[in-house]
Image 1 (cartoon, rainbow, N blue to C red):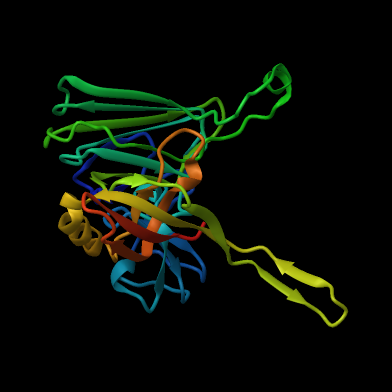
Image 2 (image 1 turned 45 degrees about the horizontal axis):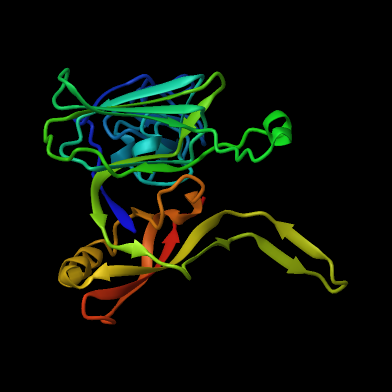
Length: 301
């Protein structure tokens, strides 16, 4: 069981991206333009989109004018960095981003669409490569010759890396996702890895469904599909010597969306959850080991 405590990617940290800002279809705000109700503009200084709430012109920038402009999500380039699910960065066949995030030991990518991700870490900008991993995003489980020929491609949507060398404070991190078809990434999060312990048997995963299901007087259902969020109930065996550290660390994350990793093996992606813990408790069970119970609720998707 591990947690990636996020590092917020700032404008200064994003060295380059193959996704333009403004991207195709995005329009930068202009103080002299008369905007219709519902018009959407972007601000490169905040990396946000804004929707016009009242038709007309305004000399005040949208981020400072809540009467006339409403936030409408991140720009296309920054969708992967806004720490929310459902705001993706997309491109035709590939996305490459180069960042200087400081010392990090973990990386997680969620809501992926593509065929391959390559992660490269250099000890300094333009320096020596000290870490490189290629992740195949084909999650298809082939167990027979029939599966090999006839099973549909299954997209691996989430993965984590928790072995990045963290002693390079001036590192340069390059992430590339490629495919022959459109690619997309909803969350790219880097940060420090907090090791909690070993997830043990009895842990559960599931979802919280926000769909609306109403039965009429004849017994028929009216169903409106909504979003859902993942939930995990994890029991973790921890070292007794880490009791204080784990308690303080988890308490400090109570209001920070993190990537919680119940298991990082391929095939156990449902054990990766991006969100908050709803509750945690530590049981002083044995002389050398304790138990930590975590209830994790993911962000809606």
